[in-house]
Amino acid sequence: MVKLGICLLFVVQALGMSVDKTINSLAERVAKSQVRKGTKFFPPFSYYNQFGSYPSEIKINFNGILEAHLLRDGIGFLDSNCFVTLWINIILLEAQRYSPKPPAPSEEQLRLALSAISSYHDRNRAFNESIFVFWPQSYNSSTDAWVCGPVNLGGLAREEAKFNDFIEKLLNDLGLEFLWKKIGAILQELNGLVKAFRIPADFDDTLVNVGLGAMLANQRDNFPDAYTYWLQNNTNLEFVFESIKKYSYRPFDNSSLDAATIDPRSYFYLREFLYEVANDGYPISLVSTWVENISEDRVLAYKGVAMPFNLNNVDLTVTANVLYGITSAILSQLQLPTKAWFDEDLQAIYLNSSNLIMWQINHNFSSRPDLALTYYPSVYNFFWFVSRTVNLLNSAANFTFPVMAAVKKSLTSALRGAGTKFFLTSVQHDSKDPTLLYFDDFLGNGDVNIEGKLCSLSSNLFSTSKDKDFGLNFSSF
Image (cartoon, rainbow, N blue to C red; front, side):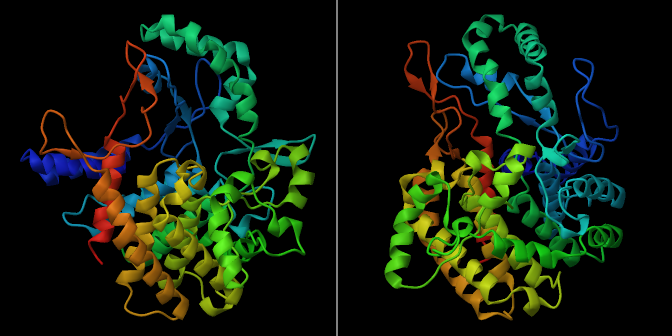
């Protein structure tokens, strides 16, 4: 919501409307969306909505049928998760850097959100280790394990009859009852898919939380209580950085199955990069997605804590968020002494992972962005994440570690070169008004018209807003 608001501001300016008034209205809208009364999962009377969080929806990317866009817009499952609330907090704080500033979030607003976020510490570990999960966890007494998963979607899928009734009623309410025959079979398979959502902790949420802490550290004078609260709930960040090393992908390490094995989807897009690295003759280590390895998965999978396909993977957007978390932690002096945790091994992962991002940008994601961006299909989203790190590095006066200068150089070069070329060649002109520009992404490109031919009924607001976000970060260097 907040990011779409940035795109809206450009429209507002073009129409001569009041920017200040629009910014204030958007800030108020975000504040009002925060859940101030939590509800439990008790369908059809109520669905789980976490107190203090910012709600979102799980959407199914229906395509290939005439009414696909109506289904995408009309069907959604209320979802509470760590990631959305983390990012909205970050964007609210980041917006304070710009002029005109939106109204600052209140200490209460931040405190409630931080309290909700703290509930996502992985309960299969010690609380102070600051390893986070994406969805809420529930305790399974028969396996003595905390299992992560989407509360509402998972609950409905487990009660298949209620789930089908829910969707059928929703379609009837929308006047789309004829669509049930087309999608009923798809939705009935959802229970099997939900089982794949019982995932372990991940480095994405974990390092985005570190980035939030760094941002609060930088604005501690404005939000002292929020910063103190975050510190009290994250007292052992060294464990996070040790875990990055422990679970990193080391393809040339023949001594460890855990380190050298990766999801075939990842290897497929990584292989050309790895061939080049192998020819250079030096070892490599890359950021992985899951805080789990094969040996642990063999034990935990039976308890409901399993990596998808029981394998770790390398997602470029997760990698970008990890790089941001490390960079911001160093520059904000969030965790001291820095030299103790940012050792040679972690510096190698930091450099190798940034070189991977540079290589993939320069080589069009090995022509498989669907594999390279496993959990974030939007290329625009990826570029925005990378630009945030480059903005930080280019804003720094100096570096304690020379490796940061190398990362700054490689990522800046990639964004100035192939990254900028991507945006320039992707821009599209509105068919009715060629002076209006927009950016289109994958969503809706599989739609068909009444003749059964492919057409695009996508929403361009998200991808266009990401272009503007990229531009805001890019303009500083």
